[in-house]
Structures are given as structure tokens and as C-alpha cells.
Length: 464
Image (cartoon, rainbow, N blue to C red):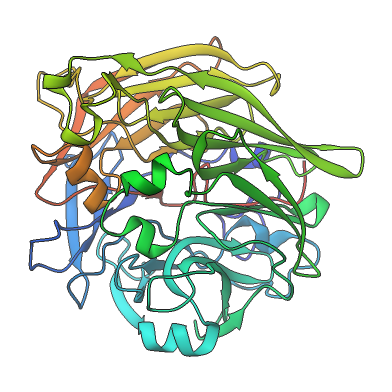
């Protein structure tokens, strides 16, 4: 039978979403190189195995302006609209909110009339964002029960902080203003996530725009000036509650992946590197009594390497760092996927016991030293970076570009964009690269992927 829902892609729980039909197409941000005068684009990928154009880029929608540096993006509405207190019961998953991380411009695209050829319907200029919210460099987009939330790395256009979160109107996409009422000690920003069952928001730290836009600054890195904390917030009261820090030597606390089941009060965050030994790590935040704690649950070591095969930035270390730059959690909260962009390893962990993850799969794709080729023999520049997981957990999509200035530092020979698919064994664990799926985007870098109908990082749920 059909369900009476405002949008058939909305589900009350992650469990129900896991039984949704497979995705038929997806969207991928395609930033152009810094010296490329073309505007960035949003690519549309055919993901229907029964289609003659399966596994290809079927359209490329250029944005109106150059220099945006598209990065993360998200939907205007999703399954959180089914939360009991959601005030917008009739919204639909229709618009993509696409920020320009370098330009601070936000573009809204409508996917409804022709999902394979979205059209630009609105552009929010950086001056408007700065005037109404006091922020710049918009980054993560989440569709909340009560509106569209976006965070930003910068406070103003001068490259300094504090970064923070602002809201967009559900209907007009007008910038409503800054979200925080009391930000406490929070200054750096990167990602944000929430536990709707606990009225709690979590934010993470990278650096101010001045610290990241021209590449990693070695003096700041060795001086331990990049982010090393997550922040806990009262979601309803919009006030800072608690700061939780990783190790003294750990730097850049990036992607946040909370458990999808709203009754579970834990989540995972990836830490890019340690200045002590170049290792990367995964930490678990969890509620312990009335306060939150942060515990390291995975450490991925650096791999020895000859200086001659390393980029100048790393030659003094004699090792290639894993550089964990993205993670993702399957909708059943069982498998955590980890991209080690430096070593080129893509890993799967069984996190059924979140305090004791168990490695269950590994595939090599590119890498600074290893440079592992695709299963079809094609060379892969860069390494596994952004990862997205289908709602049933069986298909995992991976792209290879991190951030233009950082691409150039860690892969100075250049990066050609690609997107690949891996098949996941959801029963016993394990990963295998699909040798027939390899999208070469050429001089377009490939960054975040969003799947039509939702994916493992797009939607939030109010019911277990």
C-alpha cells in the first residue's frame, strides 16, 4: 500500500529507510581547479543498473559564477520533517542547497521537474550572508525538523573566526540569521550533527579560512593550532554546553557521524592526523550519565616511505600519513567507513560494539605513495576521500578530491577527478570494488555525493 507522507522518500526511522528502493541517480559537486576559469558544476550520475547510461555522468549543470569551490551540499527537506514537533509538515525533498566554500555564495537548485537536469532558482550572495548572519565560507548543510541549518568556517570576509551555524527559511531560502545564542568558548568550525532524541547538537573544528584556504600551514600544524575539540550544544536553547578535546597532538577534528537510531547517544568523529607520529584516529563521543565523554576507538598508523616519493610537505617525516578526511556510518549503525586519503586505503569497520570496532574490509584506491589502480586498470590520482552509503548499506560511493589548495600540496602532480563504487557485504562484513563502475570527471574534481531519495548522511530520524 502507499503511505500518506508529504514525500515518499521520507521515513520515520533509519530502519524503515534501509528498506527503501535502491537509488537511481545521484548528484556530485564538481569544483574546477583554482587556475580554471570555468564555473564549478553539479554533476548528475546515473546509478540505475538497468539504464544504458548506468555509471556515467549524464549531465553537468554549471553554476552562474566562477570561483565558488563547491564542497558539501544537502537537501532542503528530509525524513526529519516527520518528527512530531516539525512545523513544516508539507515540505518535500526537492531543492539542493549548494554552498561555495571559497566564494561564500550559496546556490539553490530545483530537482523536481527534471531530476537529471536541475536548474538554478536562487543565489544567495556572500554580502547577504555576512549582513544577515555574520558568517562566511558556508560548509555543511542539514535538513532539520524545523528548518535548514548551514554552518560556516568564517565569521566575516576577512578570513578570521568565529565560524558557526545559521538558518535558512524553509520556503524562501532567505538567511534568517545566526543560530547560536551563547557560543561559549567555541571559535573554530567544520562540521555539525545532532541527536534529535536528546535535543543535542555536536560541532567540530578545522580552522579559520585564513588557516586553510591556501593549504595547510606547517607552522600552525606543528604548533598544534588547528582544531582539536568537539562542542556539545543544547539544541533547543541554542547554547554551548560542553567542550571535549582529543589528544594533545591530534589535529583537525572533522567529520561527525552520529548514530542514526535517535535512542542511541553516541557518534564517531574522524581526526586527520597526529603531529607526534602522523597517525589518524577515530573517536567516539558518548553520553555518560549527565555529561558527554570522548574516547579514541581506532588508530590508523602512518606508513614508512622514502622521501623521494613524498611531496615536499612530507619529505622531512619519512612516512605517508593516512589522513582520515571523511567517514560515514551505515543506516543500521553497524558499519563505519573510513577514507584514508593519504595512504589511499578505504576501510570498513564493524561498529556493532561502538567502543570496540572491528576491521572487516579494506580496499586501496590511489594514494600518495601506493598509487593503486582501479580494478579496470585505470590509474587513480588522489586517494579515497568523500564517501556516501546507500540506504540499504550495500553500495558505497567514493570520490577523490579534498580541497583544491590541499589537493595541490599532497598530490602536486595533479588530480583528475573520479568516482567509484564498492559493494559491501552487509551480512558478514567485507568490501569489493566494482570493476565496472569508474566515472572519470577529468579536470573537474569530484567531491561530495548525494543520492536521490536520501543516503546515509543526508537524513535524520526521530523514531528508532
